[in-house]
Structures are given as structure tokens and as C-alpha cells.
Length: 139
Image (tube, one colour):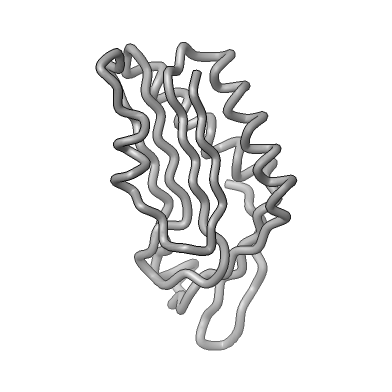
């Protein structure tokens, strides 16, 4: 299995992520794109701010990718995550997975985002008109 893990303060290139996982051997590609929504619990969101301990976050994402590869016959897996200040509509995370069959791609992709949100040291602050709040990175 090939993997690519990246944390960046620059906008994410969704098409590049999709292109990277494509291969003639792949019968299924699943893509998850996490974006900044405009409201949380009825309050207007102005922006999100992401911070991370990058070395530890990349190590943890590598570990999760390896676990996904052990659980499902994945061919390629990519995870790109943003840090810094993101506006409404911007992509915060892109996960793309390719596999011979779609079921493996779907399951591995869901495992990646669910586990990433639970274990990777990336912290999110939601900023509203009346201030901001750091939120747990858990689903």
C-alpha cells in the first residue's frame, strides 16, 4: 500500500489528492472532504482555526493508515489536513482511498476520518461573532 500524509497551512488541492490515488488496478475510489460549515448549533461561524503538533500528528496519521491497510486491501491512501485560519467553505481535510473493490475503499476512508478525529493531535477553534471556542476533535 502506498500512502501520502501531509499537513499544510496552504489550501488543499482536492483534485491532486484524487489523481494521486487513481490507478488502473483500482475499481473503487472513496473521497472524504471535510469543509468549514457556516453554522454550529444555530450560531454563525466566521472561521475555524486549526493548530497541531505536526510531527506527532503525522506519526499518528501514518499509524492509522497502516491500520487501514491491515484491515482492508487498500492500494493507495492519502490524507491532507489544513492548519491555520480557514474560511467558510474551505476544505480542512481530504482523505482519498483506492482499492480493487469499492467496499474496501469506503470502509477504509470512513475508518481514517473517524479515527483521525479521535486520536490525532489537531485542535479546532470555532470563531463566532461573539468569540471563539476550542472544540473537541471527536465526532
